[in-house]
Length: 205
Image 1 (tube, rainbow, N blue to C red):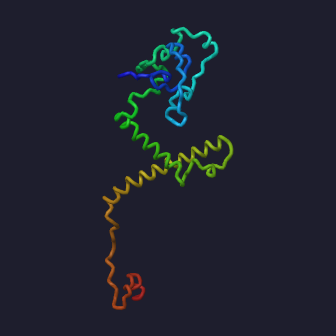
Image 2 (cartoon, one colour; image 1 turned 60 degrees about the vertical axis):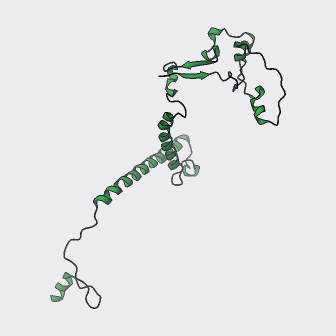
Image 3 (tube, rainbow, N blue to C red; image 1 turned 120 degrees about the vertical axis):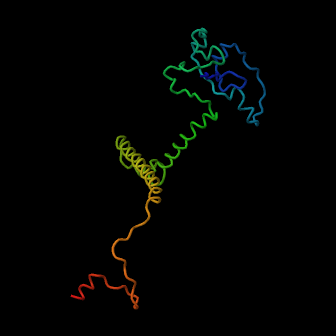
């Protein structure tokens, strides 16, 4: 498995931050003053003064750390992190490259499921984000109500799935009600239905 290439944010032709330690370690001279057109947004954003500065301690400013005590990323502009190098942080590593087709195939379905659940949870029926539906005070009461609301969402998902899956089976196997008993006689000349067998028996009696 290939490693993950990391670069110091203060290195490169377009650094993202200003870091005094990086300039000390790599002995980068201070940039010469240059005029910047303040109406040009791109030029002002790219200027060093517009970059966020990563502070270092006053002691490190006066006495820079030796190279062996610096982190790996500070010893050279880029490093390669391989599986197992992160230790306990290895669970946050992604084996698939960001926005690569394999990454999209793995995370798009999960993202769709997450957004679908968020849509159900924030719909007008449940709407867990509405404080008016959780009027109880206290963290314990709010947590309990939220758990019950999420439980009702799960029950609704199961009910919808059951209705969807059983509807197809019912339409294919159910052929309508079957009539049992004697065939009803047609209406007489008056348009009224004939009397039932029980009424006929009573009349004869």
